[in-house]
Length: 218
Image (cartoon, rainbow, N blue to C red; front, side, top):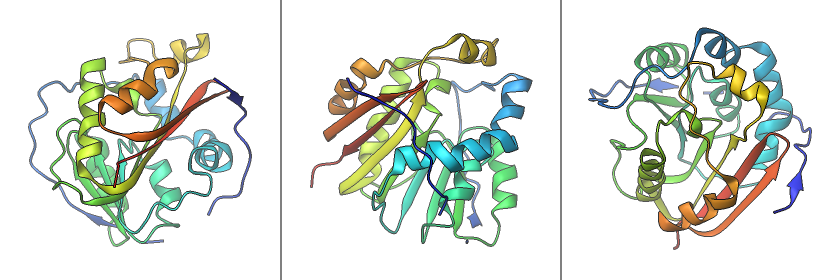
């Protein structure tokens, strides 16, 4: 597997909000206080804007109706909504979903409180989907695979699923003390995407992270 450094690139307006009643049997708050602070910080926002998001999205055409899975406080949402005609963000944490929905009111973003492993969307709805540094918060490989399968289900034929997640390091472990942290192995992740039904899967490791792109067959 090749190694790629995350390049720097410039960042690329519009949010409705919707709260769906859901029952989240497996969920418990997955982040310690410092980790929650960092994920909403200006430092992380700058890194996302300048390196992470461009490294993952490159020049891909995401289409007119995009799904973001696990936006958290919405730093990636802020970047994406300036570039896309419509964005739906599904967030399992009720407080984060409510906060993001309030902040996105009146824009092109619809925020849904819901479970990425059991999404309340019809089959074949979205033109693409993405997940940014979220997957390791899903507390088991089984639930992660369910989320991959659900993402496949809600995508249109020919649509892409792109994303990234972290790889293990001492600093990453310290950030996740007393957190949920179930890291996916980049060496086996392509096979997991293929089991969910995806084709044309590409996985590449970078410094401290890996990215992927996969397609739902037309």
